[in-house]
Amino acid sequence: ARVLLFDPQGRLLLVRGRATPDAELSFWFTVGGGVDPGETLEAGALREVAEETGFTAVELGPVVWERASVFTLADGETVILKESYFVARCPGGDPSRAAWEPHEVVLMDDIRWWEIEEIAAAEEMIYPERLRELLPDIVAGRLPATPLEISVEV
Picture 1 (tube, helix red, strand yellow):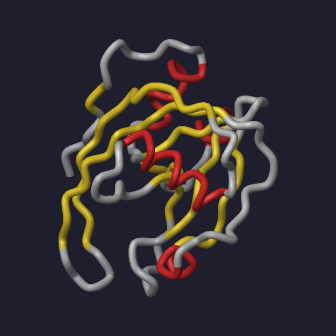
Picture 2 (spheres, rainbow, N blue to C red; picture 1 turned 180 degrees about the vertical axis):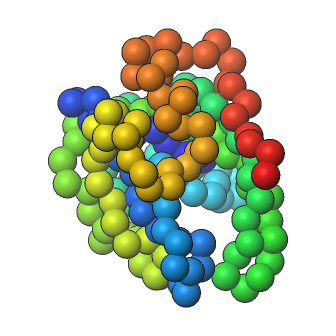
């Protein structure tokens, strides 16, 4: 479960990381992660936000996007991830890394709020690939009636 987490100023929280500990290339992505067995998508999204940011006062909205992506893990295993992107709001503030899991500490090195204009102009790699294209509708409150499929063929 991935989360488009906005603060009261309309900024989006993104995390910077890399695919493997020795990878030179880093990229930015939304907060979120895997859903545990027996956990709902909503519960997984809220847990991931709490773990990655420390924020627990989160108003979780609907799933607006779905995406399938292929990743190669640090051990070389290839996995297909199916991601659901929720829109959410929180009071904002400085995110905490205190609950980051050991693999997150190794793979993720920054987390910060981004102005929407900053995302549009950024030269850094930001995932999902269509974030810049689709974000203005989300910010304007034009949410799709059903989740939009945003997978990109590689």
